[in-house]
Length: 242
Image (cartoon, rainbow, N blue to C red):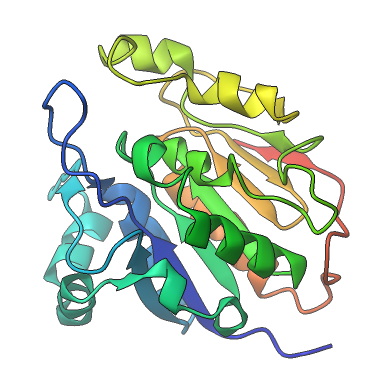
């Protein structure tokens, strides 16, 4: 079996503002925790978006050590300034792909054809995909080699309608992500609002909300480091991790 590349990709939204004018961007902890998991495991990392350049950032909490470490790291700052477009990257260069959330992610990530092709190719070769919160929207239009939706028949989670209402954005988002997942045949499940809830289905790992970012990153790195995991679309028994 080929050696798993020890480099991870973190996909970030490039949406600056929501339809109501509220600032958007990627949600910082949902990038910081995957980044920390990668570097703590000795892996390299890159950032990518739907377009190049520095992506906007939201959800900053400098009292949180991983977020502060992320913001203060010189390599992170330099690579964020030169974030590449996903279409210029090769899926075989990465052992794991993380997709950070932030409400903007359901606006630009689902309909990006380059991203959908990248994720399909990465998953088809046995790579791990870990998406959290609204970043799960990146999976909506990803297809399997047979032409079906990647999420069809697979257990997933994402930011819930109850959480959208709690943050006052249920009338701002253009659609509810859980409904869009179900429409594509996903076996959607939700945990308690704003509490960590992670679902693992084969090489697909999804997290419900920002509180899930640390556990999601840990589960994804565990899978990515498991050289015995079969390639292609073979899957282990799904499990939920809180």
